[in-house]
Amino acid sequence: MNRPDKVLLISASHINPDGSVARCERYWTSAPTLVYLKAFTPRGFQVDLVDDFRTAPPQESDAGLVGITAMGLQIARAYQLAREYRRRGKIVVMGGQWVSLNPDQALEHCDAIVLGEAEFAWPELVEDFRSGGLKKRVYRSDRLYDWKDLPRMDLMSLPLFRRELMREAIYRDYYFQFPLLVTRGCPFACDYCSIAQFHHSSYRVRPVGDVLRDLRDIQAIGSRSVLFMDDNPVADRAYAKELFLAMRPLEMRWCSQCTIQIAQDSELLDLAADSGCFLLSIGFETLRQGNLSDINKNWAKAREYSDLIREIRERGIQIVALIMLGLDDDTPEDFDRTLEFLIENKVALAKFHLPLPYPGTRFYERMERDGRISDSRLERVPLRQRRDPAAEDVA
Image (cartoon, rainbow, N blue to C red; front, side, top):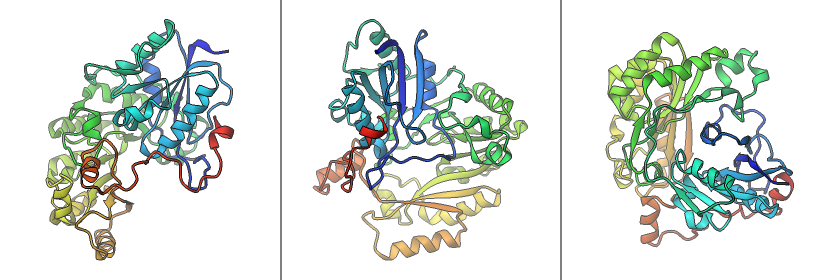
């Protein structure tokens, strides 16, 4: 029986090359997407949350409405889940960046999608469902959420949070970083990035007082470790300085993704360190300035990287370097050159990526226009798959 007052929200995992669904019992943090969707769901609904990366979604559920969110890597698994739940008679809706940038493809697998940001569109969709059925296949808002007065996050309902481990200091203080949203979007428009398109090139910040409230909520349950789930929390330098200054008395520990610009302002970098910053994930992308210009990131200067890395490390902040290998100006020698650069500059961690064009971005459009995309089926299941995980995992 499908209950018209129950919603199942799923964050999809991804599919391994052998066809299995990726699962992990231990994980370092939990995305807040499902928790916020639950908070924006109109009253009168029971909402269950499942992170597919940790726990298989229920094979049997009485939820009448199933919502699935996914990024690019996860989309094949998300489509599997959508097909299976529709087969079981559920109304299935999908959202997230991939879905928003590839809406026609997503609509082949579900009943409706949320296009773009969900704060206004999701409640409308749910109310339509309650009143007898979805009225549209595409739900979108005609305005952006102002990023003020976000609902208070229910920290205990984070899908990957292990409450029973909070007694262990290593988990409480280091292993699990509570997710926190501070800013949204990015003012830059790097060709390979989907952020600008998804957020309509906007950049919004939360009131400092709201952020401090959330930090105190985290402290109240015995933790001081936080991950800012932002794309670029320092894009508005005046705001970032105000926030970091206000955070200092709380003695929190935080990490985040960030642009190299944080090191171009010594006052900002000092305040970040004093407020508890211990790790920054920074997109350096490439050591060749020609590559940076080619991907519309010429505001970053490769020749300055060594000095800026030193400035960050001198404040006790470690770096995760995000690197792309295989851009047009690269040569085979750049593999060794890049590795030597990271070692010489004592970069703690690095993540290497191929410049895979993300559908909906300018990078993809350029590659397609130039006839350089040989296979556009990026959502397909890996070639080595020999079984349908949805049939046994739901799924």
